[in-house]
Image 1: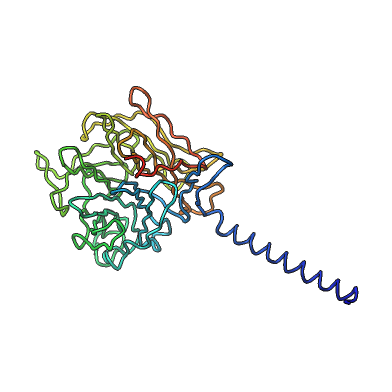
Image 2: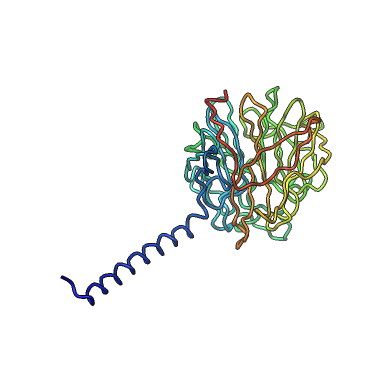
Length: 362
């Protein structure tokens, strides 16, 4: 029979093992739990997506439905020198998300040397096109400028193509599709909208200017307007960047981001028009910081459950407390419309949205 001293030693060892194990589990939760976006439940209530909807630092999310799946193509949010690839996420129901790693990186588009960001995806004739910005191109204004030796003065908007939304992708034009400043708009933050007549409109622009153009049939260039210009400026009031267009009940809605993307002033506003060409008079702010949830909410897209009038906003925001410029997460919340077609302010949540399986909604 063990002595009291041996028994006490055994108990001390057992207690230490238990405490160390609990400490290890707590540490793992701290390191990874705050970034986990598993579906959340509350008693007998249905599971929801939770916000953020998937773990990791991701921004500028482009949401789209391809076949019977929801897809989100976000920016991998990191320092420009580390922001060298894109991941994608797919879901059958808006709640459970599957990560598709490195669908595009600088081995596929070697002309991109930094800041691969703000993707936009669209399907055409069975092919999937992924538009993106690369290198945070600046206006070449210095004497003796050499584009081959100046990373910030060579780049713009590129496009890759694949047979499946998750790739493998290949560079569609072998360099930037658009690398020139038109109407002082920085060539970033592109969005492609296919209208009912089959026209593919191309919205883009940073530095407070928004342009519209028309893609040609094979997405290798742009069709000139009747006046010979490739792009027309349609900048609405307070526009900064991040245009996104959708159509509902005959009305075209243009959303855009205002404020500064690095801080709490970032927000989303919108305008309405009876044509994809605008003009889009500013209607109001529909997404902004909430000191009880998150700050810096912006650069959004919108998604509709097919064959319904149910709409969702997919956007990024900065958790509170926020410790880094690039600590942004991707979230989803409902969009509601008033009877006159205007949009109600979107309420940010931690719960996200309930499941909407496409197989049950189509």
